[in-house]
Length: 216
View 1: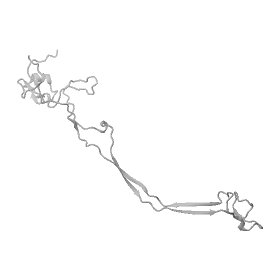
View 2 (view 1 turned 90 degrees about the horizontal axis):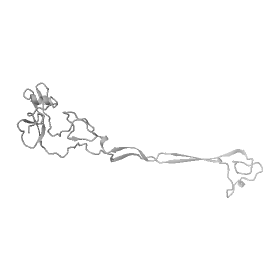
View 3 (view 1 turned 180 degrees about the horizontal axis):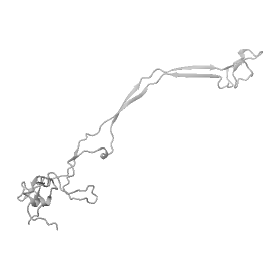
View 4 (view 1 turned 120 degrees about the vertical axis):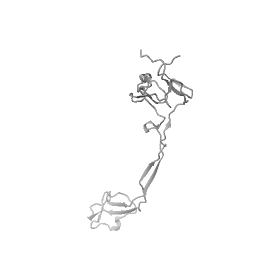
């Protein structure tokens, strides 16, 4: 069976057969290979004046051109896509946690002290009523009972709410946490990981002789 010019295939041998070249990205002379140049042009390299390139399939797998259903990338003839390894960006990583530590800054505080001031309110003059309820202390009217009769051993009523005032002032500060720093530990090592599929090394070769392909 005669092979068409420009046909590429896998060859399991350790040499390149006569009339073929290895698909290794090498440059060929246009003047010496005008037929195959007219098929390939400079799609795979070269200046298209004196040289042209052969497809480089070393470590690569061929893929159909165009954009199939569900595909995300449009592949043009001669495109080189993909990579051996890849490193994930933050937006591509799964949700995860990091360990964190808190280093507090504390204050020893100071001794608390309280000062209480008691004010006893009274009327500056003689009293006008006998009942202590809702009233203030006052000087007895003339002819009243002696002062000793102004007191009793039990309480029976309530004087005015502001008859006795107590003002308490507390000074000082208590100990506690006044600040600190939070340290979030790093996770991972940012090492790229391989994305190779299981492979077997074979040789791609291209025919540079044979039947010239018709476009019709």
